[in-house]
Image 1: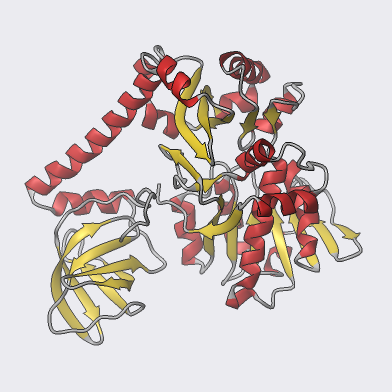
Image 2: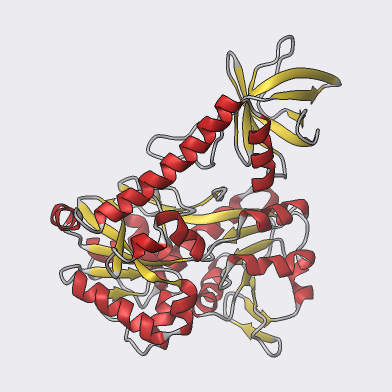
Length: 442
C-alpha cells in the first residue's frame, strides 16, 4: 500500500475502518480494515497467525452484502497487513456501499477529502490560467509543450462549465522538468470527440498553441492529435512534433521486457491490435527485430495479407481466430475499450501492453482479468523527468512516448527521425527506458 518517493498514490484510498473476516489456512479470523482501495486494502494484523508475502487468502466483508474477495499478502508490518486483490477489483458501487457501512465520522471524512481534493484541483487550474498565468510563464520559460486533449470525464475533474468561460483557449495543466529544461502540459478546451469530428477546431487549437507560446522549441502532439492535425491539412513541421519515433521506441522497449518474462520467453510471435493505423504499421515492422512473426490485427483489413521480410513475417488480418495464435499483444486501437469486443477471442494467459488513448478502463481490465488476461500500461521513464501535477491515468515520473521524441530533440537536435534503430540508440544513450506498469485505477 506504499508508494515510492516522488510518485502519486496509484489508487484512491478511503481510510475507512469496517469489520472483515479473513479466511486463511482453514481458519476464519476477525479483524478490521485500516484502509481500502479499488484493488487493495490494509488490515489490522490478526493475532495468533503468521502471514507471509505472497500468501493467498479470502476477505469477507461482513456488511453490506456479506461478499467475499480473493487477495494476496504483499506486506506484513508489526500491526498491519497490506493486501492486493487477486484477479478482481472493487467497483465504484462496492466502494460507495462500504463507505456507507462505516461510522458517520469516517463517512464524513471521506466525503470531505473527496470534495477538498476536487475543489483544490479546480482552484489550481483556474488560478494557473488567470491571475497567475503571466507569472507561471515567466518562471517556467517553457522550451517544450505537451499538447493534449481530454474526455468529458477529464474536463469535469478539472473545471466546471462556469469556470470554462473564464479560461483561455489553451489551458495550462502541468509543469514538466527534464534535466535542466522546463515545459508545460497544455490542454484544449475542445474534447477529443470534437477534435475528431471538426477540423476547424483542430486548426484553431494548433493556431492558439503557436500564438500563445511563440518561443517554444517543440510542441509534442499527444495521442490522436497528429492524425487530427494531418486531417486538418496542417503540416507537422517544427515546432510541431508528431511523436511517432518516441512512441515506437517506447513500445519496442516494453515488448523487449515482455519477451524476457518467464511465461513468455518461448513465444514466437506477437499481435498488434490496431495494426492498420499510422503507428501500428510501423510498430509491426519494428517488432520483427524481436519476433519472427508479427500479426497486425485490424478490422479495416479487407483480406489477409502475408508480408515476408528478411528477418520475419508480418501477417495483416481481420480474422478474430488469429488472436488465439499468440499470447502477447500490443494495444494501439483508437480507444482502449475497443478491446472489450475481443475478449472472447483472446487466449487465457495473454498479456496486453496498453498504449491506447484513452487507455483500457478499469471496467474492461476487470473483464479481461476474469478471462485470465493481464493488462499492463506502457510507459517510459528517465530519472531526471517529472510532471506536476500528473496527467490522468499516469504517474508523475512516467513519460508518454509521444513526448520522448521532443525531449530527445531538445537534447540532441540532430537525432535521426527517419531511421528507427538510430533513434533507438540515441534515446537509450540519453537514459530513456521503457517499462510496463500496473494501470492506475481511475
